[in-house]
Image (cartoon, rainbow, N blue to C red):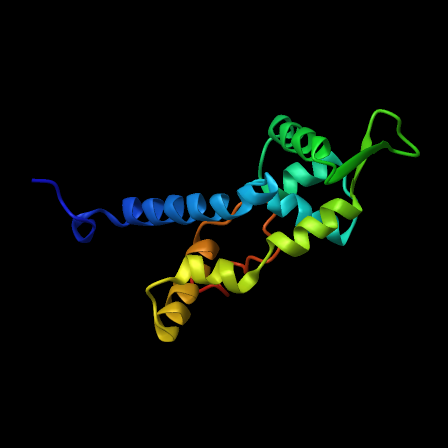
Length: 156
């Protein structure tokens, strides 16, 4: 007899829920031939142009992975690459008008929140968010400018 989720280790629960939500979100984004990896790129480019390296760093992926993401998005006409005006070895990545339209259509904060918090009441959502922020602070990554020093995050 297999154990139910209530018996699973916390890490397995967290990972399983994250994968399920990611699959559901990817199914939503599939209407625009997007996925969870391409959305942050569109959001970053909606604020300003970036280099491939900057996008890779900001999204915590390798430059090789970012290259594949950008190639796909370029084929879809969501982004454009132009030579950097001062350094021909680099490219400037920009959001196209088509990409901006897709971003507006695909990003529905209410729908995304509903996918993630389905089954929870308002107090449970508040508690979940508080716990996740605490966990993020306890597991910082290089470049997390938002992360509080350990003593301010209650981790010392």
